[in-house]
Image 1 (cartoon, rainbow, N blue to C red):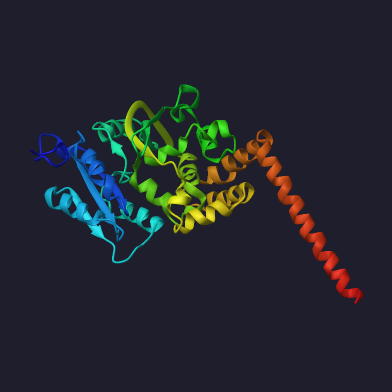
Image 2 (cartoon, rainbow, N blue to C red):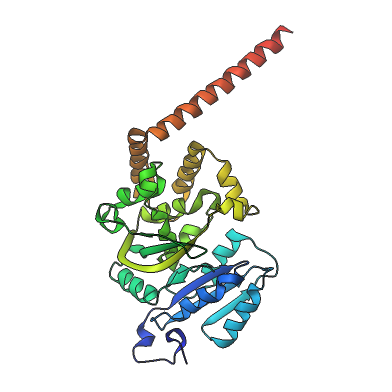
Length: 322
């Protein structure tokens, strides 16, 4: 029996924009079939699935080959060597052909209406970069956690550029816990995403990537559960100690992270002139005025620099007295 995603062409299908599901796969054999089945069950017919398999050691490649042999809308690429997370994650976007794109992890489930619902949402907001629905969260052993929704007061669809970007640069735990970073798992306009990925340093995490797009493009939220996200009881750093971007990010202080994020945003080719010279300075001023943690980090950095300078002066004076 054919699944909706690779059925024969039907009336009006040619008019539907192509959507790419990108899977950057490494050692996901235990859950990969379930994730692929959820993509093949989408009720949107014009969907391609691009898999970049990164030299897994657990049998993931065999699962990918089996599905690619049976489903013509799956394109499988095996990397000649282990590219690592950041290179492989970008590669699936570049290899896609769709007008729209979403990352599909090897352990997550996309409910049948995920693609069709979010394509409709983006087509209704031509200036938007990404659309996302509510997410059901479970631990990887199946234990339910919660459902993440964005209530009206925190719905980025209703926010302007500064209001929605705040969620990606804030240090306030009550705002970060809303998990707007889950928009990374939404449906993107692929060309906007590619421009934002140009030269992107992944050590800054997904929030800065989303901030680069939210300064000039809308975000759309659909209040309907469309994805089942599987969480882990260990941190990403514990699970993937070899990922250099995670290691570098974990060593940065809050101040250093925000400083590097600001430098990236100022130089990002995706950012408009207005965002670079008006919105970013306004956002920085707002953070300094309203967030005590940012002010503490700035004071700490200033005092540290002054102490280092004083120590250097003392060493120089001591050298002259010898």
